[in-house]
Amino acid sequence: MLVDLHSHTTFSDGRSSHSEMVEAAIQRGIAVYGISDHLCFHDNPWTTKPHLFEDMRSTMAALKTGTSSAKILFGMEVDYVPGCESRVALLKADNGWDYIIGSVHYLGDWNIDSNAPDWEGKDVDATYSRYLDLLEEMVDTGLYNIVGHLDLPKKYGHYSSIDLTEKYLSIGQKIKAKNMAYEINTNGRIKPCNDFYPHRTIVELYHQLGVDVTLGSDAHHRDNVGQFFDEAAAMLRAVGYTRICYFEKGEKRYLPL
Ligand SMILES: [Zn+2]
Ligand SMILES: [Zn+2]
Image (cartoon, rainbow, N blue to C red):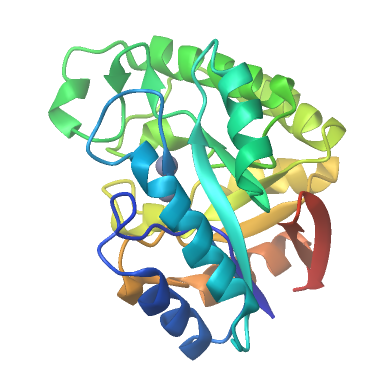
């Protein structure tokens, strides 16, 4: 019984329609499928444009009331940038999302995960430190349900030389205290880091803390829906997880793993 809560369609930077993504999810036996297009606070080509919001709401409403064998959820992957809190709260109230994946893609004006050469000359340790501070701030807001791709700065193969265990521990405690979850984002397996986000050592740490986990393929095309899920589920079971969670109308629910 698998859950895939992270996917993108042509409403943001995905290349398949809502119905194509849902069809792929059903074919792959996904029991709970969520679509979570991008919402950014920077002007970029991959954010969902405001004029599409109404269409997105009606498209999702039609899918949710359809006769699909999977439970369909309306999520959104919303960026965190300092000062965005009131806008997130307003958008959350207006759109009736089942859940929000909170992601840090920007450090100031630098979009850390779109262009590998942008990392040239960057202080990797300082980047991790800044990124994780923002991630922690995001959790503190209490506006988000799921922490997206938790160790994203590793995408292009850059790793901190400093032991970040204490920082990950602190973030994990806060995720739990806010009744949130983190995702195993399997899309990292097709990126230069060739690993799930977050790395297994963090998954082990969070299992010990009792932090809830969910799954997301971060698919931008129907072919990637549920990618590497057998491997991810096996890893979660090996670590000791016996259930995965999802959010429906903001309420956390569980499925056995
Ligand atoms: Zn993302
Ligand atoms: Zn995404």
